[in-house]
Every structure is written in structure tokens, then in C-alpha cells.
Length: 136
Image 1 (cartoon, rainbow, N blue to C red):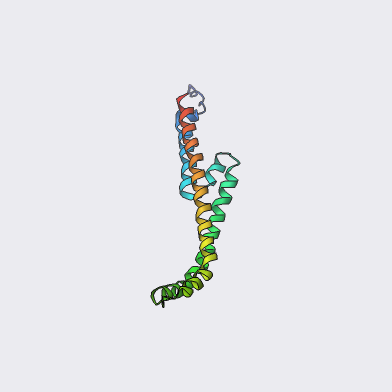
Image 2: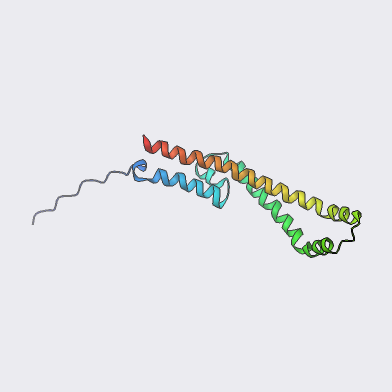
């Protein structure tokens, strides 16, 4: 019985031609913008992702601390806002209690937004870099 000829050996796929490089750039962008800013940057092998990740986690922690205070005290805030006597001292008392927590919330939003915008720049570079490598 004659032996069947062996098929030719498989060539390794070129990632640029197979679309994997393009998918990698978009994967980095999706992780950075929709999941956790900085994580996609770390996937791209850039050490600056640690800073982006730190900013985003610290921002989330600040917002969580604010919500931990605000949720149990929101009834008090609403009651004082709608049943105010018009005395400016009431407003100062309210701001003295809520002021540090509002600063914490603002800091959290600022940190997270900074990380997100920074990661957006990294994502754009990753997607553009993959487009350039695909054209070569």
C-alpha cells in the first residue's frame, strides 16, 4: 500500500497579517477605557501603567469613602436643605460637616479622570502604533 505524502509544514502566522496586532491595540484601548485605566497600559508592557493604575484605584477609593459617609447621612442633608431656617450659620454648620467629604469626592473624581485621560492617550498611541506596524 503506497504511503500518503505528508502535507507541507505549517508556517507560523505573521501577527501583522493575521490581524492579531490590530486586535492587541484595540484590546489595550478597551481595557484602559472601559475596564480599569492603567491595566491596558500594563498589558502593553509600559511601566507608566503602574502610575495610571495607582491614580485610578486611589480615585475609586476616595469616591468609595465619600459614598460611605454620604449614603447614611443623605437624609439629614435633604432635611436641612428643604427645612432651612434661612440662617447662614446653618449653612456653615452643614459645610463644616460635609466639607472634608466633598473635598474627598472631588479629589477622587479628579484622580480617576486624570488616570482615564492619561490612559486614553496611551490607548490612542497603542492603536496608532498597531496601524503603523500593519502598513509596513
